[in-house]
Structure formats: C-alpha cells, structure tokens
Image (cartoon, rainbow, N blue to C red; front, side):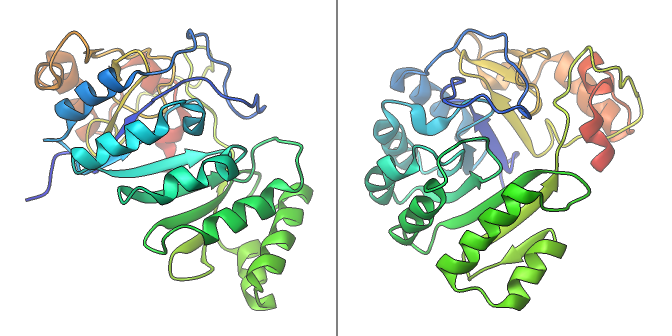
Length: 279
C-alpha cells in the first residue's frame, strides 16, 4: 500500500557555501539540525513516505554529521534524495559510498561557483558511486530552455568525460530531459521565481502539489506545505512541538487542500507564487 506522500523534504541545514543570484535571500537564522532532532523527524514521517529529500534551502553536504544522518535514514528504511551545488561532493564521496539509502543525487550545475575544475571532479566522484543511484545533472537557471555560454561549456565537459555522441549533445541542447546512461541524466528547466508576499503575482486560480505529493520541514522544525516556502510563511506547526498527525489534521491544512482541489489558492503566499502556473 502506497504512503500518503511521494516525498518529504527535510532541510538538515539552511546554510550554504554559495550565494547564487537565482536563489532568494533568506532572512532565517542559519541552523544545522542535530541528529537527535533529525531522528525525531524520521520517526514522525516514516508512516507517511518512503522517500526523504535532504533540502529546501541550504547545502546539505555542509552538514558536519552527514554520515550519521544517512545511517539514521537506513535505520528507518527511508530512501534519500540529495540536491547539491556539488562544490563539497568530492570531499564526501567516501561517505556517500557507504550508504545504501541513497536513491538519487541532483547536481545543480547552474550554481554560480568559480572552480572550473569542479565539474570533472564531480563526474569522477559519480563514477565511484553505485549505479543503483540515479544521477541528475541539472541546468535549472535557463531562459527559454536555451543553454547559456557557461552551460554550453559544462556540456562540452560532459561530452568529453562521458564520450557523448554528437546526437546526444544535440539532444541536450534541444530537449528537457536526456539520458546519458541507464542511471545518469541531464535535466533542463527555466529559471523560476521563489514565491514571496512582495512579488506582486497575486493570482488566486491555480494548483499545487504541496500537501498532496509532498510537504517540507525546515531546519528549525517548521512544517510547510510546499518545498518553495523556504521562509516558513505558511507555518503549519512545529514538528518538535506537535505530532505530524496533529499538524496534518489541522483545519488550516484541510482548507488549503480542499481549495487546491478546486484550483484555488487560499493562502496569500500561494497566490503570490508563479510556480503554480506550471500545473
């Protein structure tokens, strides 16, 4: 029997070692979730999902006890997806190799970092991992789905490392989702705007998969409906203070879900989110 959510995002830290222009500036205090807090969350969410995503904001590979957290995921039989800017990946490959809970790693190759040798280090590190792990190389800051100069340079590095045929390279330039092998893919998306009460969108009609396919838990324990509510504007409750059962049974949660089922955004942040136009 399938569980309620396809995935639950758990932000193990909201700190990041980069300050990319496409990522919204957070006003939250930087915080690292402790293993004790993390295991409490795992106990709460295990009945609801089989997949945990270790991010909302922040760089998960920054967490000083990543090894311990992954071991806890294995203890609770949860599969793990990680999204990373890749800068710290070469230094943690040996840690990641040990853990059978890893299901997928998304590399944000569009991140604004200066080390041009990093990409080859990422590719080499990926070769050390099990082929059971899905690898997604992301270009998610595009305009009109077209590669810019930097992205094209990275594709050239992909072509050289993976010995890609001209046909595959052409697909990367034209298509959104391209398989390089049975478990390695390239994914392209246009730049999206993080929702904000100040962005002036204010559109009531729309749909979101928040509270339907997923929820997110911020590093301080705040439960939010959607992985894009990085500031905790729609704070449904704190998982360190209330059970997830009680949070999900609240009238506010039921109101959000029932309105979205009618393609209506009831929360102000949802009304000011342009991402819902994609559904």
